[in-house]
Image 1 (spheres, rainbow, N blue to C red):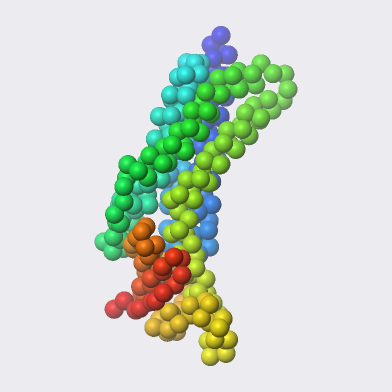
Image 2 (cartoon, rainbow, N blue to C red; image 1 turned 30 degrees about the horizontal axis):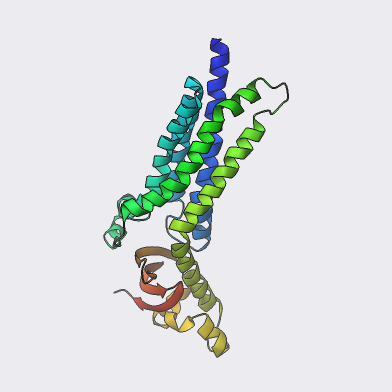
Length: 270
């Protein structure tokens, strides 16, 4: 009996592990990869911090659920675990980001202006998405894991793993679209414009194309635009959709503004 109980708890741990990985990748991993491609500074931090915390929380929920083997307790354990990504999902975009920067690049932490926002409203939205997903996964864990344990087929747990990964992948995409997409698009569009200007002789570029790319916004940066770069979001306004981004062109700093994801202007920072 002890061996059987141990096996159930071990499978519950794996159940939580894959659920946490699916959420981490869909919520923070894809965002990190796209930000990294757009030369955003410290693009992988949210993925590493949020992903690790979520995996630990979900592993614990999965293990506890099989420890007690009650569906309603499973739903409760998983609902509690969902508080971790729901809160980190908000904190690491707003108040938590300057704290993270203070460890990675202290001089930039002071330049980040935390915008006005409703913590309870945003965390409530995330908790609704993640909480419902977690309660479904938690309620299903006992029968799914139990069924796989007594199955003679190899890889019997695979369907359960695929199901929870699908549920949390969808939840992660919804949260990503809620929290990250506007900031990510602003960073991407600015980086795309910088790349366009850096790769082309602007005296030879069609004027219509140059206007479409908002190339004139980077004129104050001069030849520094061709230097390696890192992009830092320093402030954003959810209402006006204005985002302020500082760009480190290998020691030459510029402050750029985007509105509705379009580059408006840039200026050198003394």
